[in-house]
Length: 275
Image (cartoon, rainbow, N blue to C red):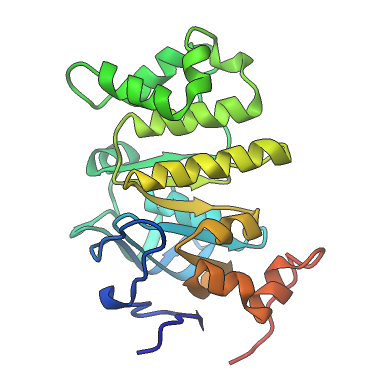
């Protein structure tokens, strides 16, 4: 089997365990999430996802990119039970997530950070983190201290209302709150949206730091170049399907992907047929 996995359309399978190539850390050969031919949409009869596929291995950082309306965020929400799924499978381990409510999916070990409305603005930073651990029993001080270590700015702002934080600090708080559940899989929906270039880099550095602790991550991003540069693997969505997939660096350097999705001014250009 070849080492470069870069294909169009459906990918069954995308790769097997022996083909996973760790970067600077250990990636397990255990598949923890598999999305198979998922058709889903917000309104009955209007399907945004048209047979989407995605897989995540333990410890992987997987990026999902694509033009506006391609189905990136819909895929993330479908995994988390926020969008009705008409057909297909979403397997987390051996459990099919389809039909479960978000609070049930959280208990399976998945946390989701939406792009907007991702903190409680009237509560303090500390109280927001407490809310993140609502399904846990017992003392959460150790978890909280660990979160403060990852996000030192939150430790300084712990008594400050979340609504008074900067955009970057709110995004850090949203990520920190999600980590209070110690998820096996963290789904981030457009974490760099509306942030300054300096804060964008800070957020991407934190995402890598979280991933290095062993947390698997699905990163849905419009900042395609930066997202692919840090990804173990990436998916390019187009018209509700996974148009391309492969190692992040392979997608970043692929001329077809670069022309259609990474070039200045043509990120929303429709795909042409290369089959």
